Image 1: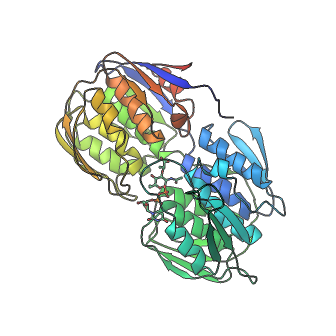
Image 2: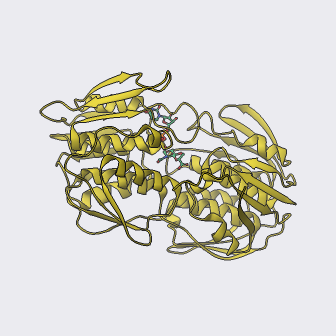
Image 3: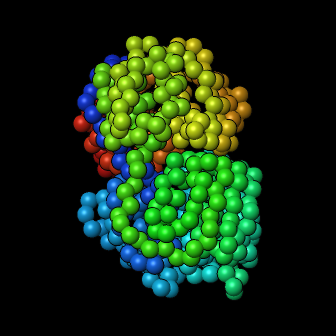
Length: 436
Ligand code: EPZ
């Protein structure tokens, strides 16, 4: 359960030394687990999922399932069994959903299961507006009725979605934005619709491919996941056959690769899939970082000097927006001007002030573009993590810096990185978790 004491990380900077070494394992992908847990609502019988990381977002998602009436049991380390009752609740808990953007993904499968769902506007990282118009228009395209009420205090909306009495009907839906969670949610909803659904201009992230594989192993008929067009033949509820193993977290792997490029003598990142890191590896090699790639590991040695590089975030397979903040932390140590162009979110630069306080030099051009001038020496500081990826950027900056840093609001980092301080200590970092 979430601790109500304030926890902090105390980090001793390496003052530019490249001294981390050894190997660091990558855990299961948070953004696959969250959707696989939602997808269990489509299964008639018990489902077993393994390689689930022990992180706060997963605890919230398990609480959300439990609140709906699901039986969720931890059967061994990082492995859970989930069984959905015949009549789950039809209302998503606003207390939990307000903490989790991914709560919106539960709406589709729950609508298939029960025919009716009510839920609040989803919470999660503050990265900009984060609308849900594509979800709403997608549910309507599949025949559902959508109404919006202000059931809570002003500002908090409640959406009520109802399937037609004869059930949802397949449709052709063209996405205005290739939204990741909208792609996943409508793909799952279409499993329960009569006939065929074609989703066009959808996201192509590896997390979507993994989710489609999980659903198809349960009897779904989904083709095209990982391309911009996905076809789903409605089959109704599914059967859990064998345990589904969560693939490695590419964003965690990329975060460790960025850390290694800055402060590692010789670091091996294990249990990862290098094929999901091609954009990052291409940039780092161009900047002068030496990287060896194996079947399920990446090996990196800290570069003596880094060349500046222009980064443009883009839907997969482009440079991931979730690595933008950690990459910017690295660019503060690169020689020259680097342009960071964040094309996905309009509010994903909130961490720049804190890095400036440490000594970084930025020129913010507009809500989507910032110029980084480097290299600038960083000094330890007191930091408040605004979201999980910025929090990881702070850890990287604090390890590069001279002197000690304190990072508050560690919950945001624990949302996505399992016991990060233990794994960093194992490769030589001086980082402690303290409770104040
Ligand atoms: C997913 O968020 C990930 N979260 C995010 O990771 C990730 O940053 C993002 O995809 C992009 O890769 C999960 O998978 C739980 P979007 P998501 O919908 O799906 C616009 C992390 O750190 N949009 O792809 O919510 C939206 O405004 C998190 O793990 C609409 O216009 O992102 C944005 O500009 C942070 N209408 C763009 O699409 C909609 O209905 C991308 O948003 C939905 C989205």
